[in-house]
Length: 90
Image 1 (cartoon, rainbow, N blue to C red):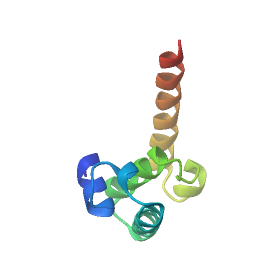
Image 2 (cartoon, one colour):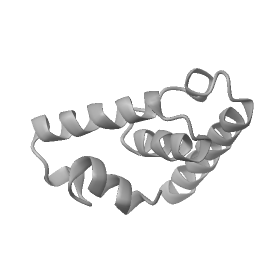
Image 3 (spheres, rainbow, N blue to C red):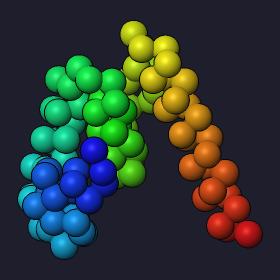
Image 4 (tube, rainbow, N blue to C red):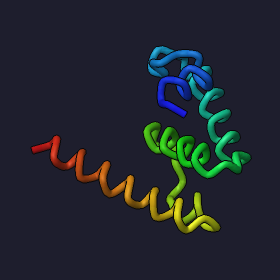
């Protein structure tokens, strides 16, 4: 799953900012549903990353409570994203 593919699949565009609020909300609901029902770990993690990019991801401990490796990967992802954001502010 690549970001452009996910955006195109769920939002019908590679730029969700161009959607109306209602269109965006409907697409976001679909991403949340897909995350909730997805069972393949890699796809589930990709959907979680998309939700994080949209500031809608559940905390890793909640999202991956039964999947310790994915929980650790999500925590590492958040740490790296925080460091990148912090370094860009300098």
